[in-house]
Image (tube, rainbow, N blue to C red; front, side):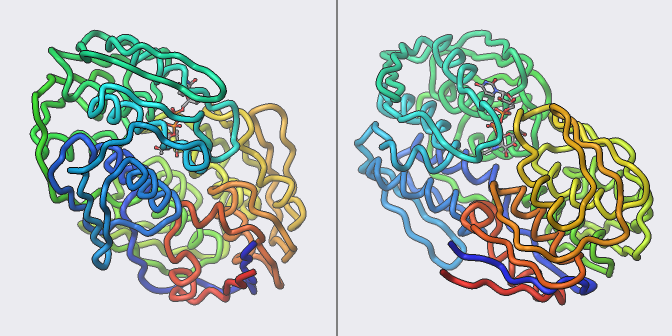
Length: 418
Ligand code: UD1
């Protein structure tokens, strides 16, 4: 298990370029098999979730190649409709393949998906949505088997605005018959990116970014060349890093609109943030006012994926902060590790009560999930003394060249390969 060795206490200064959004790229990869023409994705990050998704595409019979940061997918010869258990368990987004695999082959077989262990994470809404589109579904032995002669458009109301279910239903219905309307749809920017990508392939999707999405089925989709949106969670992670360590950092190729909830909070605690085109500048000193209250919400509310990093920030902010996690049941695994670094946190159910301390101290901690691992890395960068963060496999799922980017800003961080 790789680990980071971190010497804390350095200010962060300089410029960092934000990668394309993991959560945008993954559904685009799923969408790529909806055509047998070439799909080209520029600025594709080589993070583990993306590499796993590429492996799934290869398993289905696609040919893929990286030319620098450009990924080329050729699915002309794709013929397999089964996603093996070992790959499906590696990442939750494998379930997005259901919609597009059914649309391409009229059938799909997939093992129940994995991903970060942050709660129940059922796929009932995905399956219910697909059933409404005339897909028959049988679950046996840990596998989901889907079959369908014709995908027929319909009106679907989601019980909650699930990002993945919204994307899966769009992917399944885009080549279906007639019109599909998804109500109470998720509004995340990555869903808008999927809409733009699909429409560039010849699809007729509208309404993404609102709670009602409309998909008018088309007969055929063609190849596309596309650059996904920047990663708002990576951008948020670097902003929080700067807020915790102090310094002056510029984020290149970032969207401030997509992380308005975080920027608003950082300004409240006295970070100076300015935005110019696709650059976000943050200037932060050593005094941080209380964050008071943060509740994770579907977009445009505060993102659950930044809950762990912002909890680390609350640990060294003045006064008390209440953090409520509304989306996932067990997303506080980073808390016991932060406590090892001197944080003062009590968790009750879905709420964490954080009393700020002047400084954290270095410790040996374990990254239990992707965003929790990022939070521990930031805590270690801000702490006094040396820390190790063990099990980087989670962090590598979502951050490309994390330690190089942080080092370039002046952090003392290196990876030990084990
Ligand atoms: C996506 C993101 C993930 C982010 C999450 C919430 C990707 C690849 N991942 O995950 O980074 O943390 O959105 O913003 O885009 N739910 C059900 N039944 C379902 C589906 C979801 O009950 O069939 C519930 C979940 O348990 C959760 C809530 O809906 O409580 C939101 O989950 P969802 O929006 O589906 O998250 P993901 O798409 O898995």
